[in-house]
Length: 69
Image: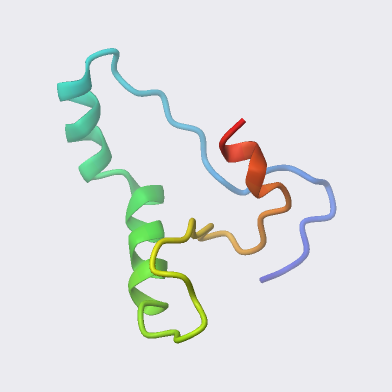
């Protein structure tokens, strides 16, 4: 992966519907979520990886606590 020198997020932005039912349908076909699932699948046999762990498909994530804040 090449260095992102301008600090612009490589993660695309999506706008989702306002109801849970529509959001769930949109997430099934969401390309970012699909990439995340592929990365999790590729790492599932790693003996040093926790059973549940956030996977950033774009590579390194600098502030993991920011996800929960």
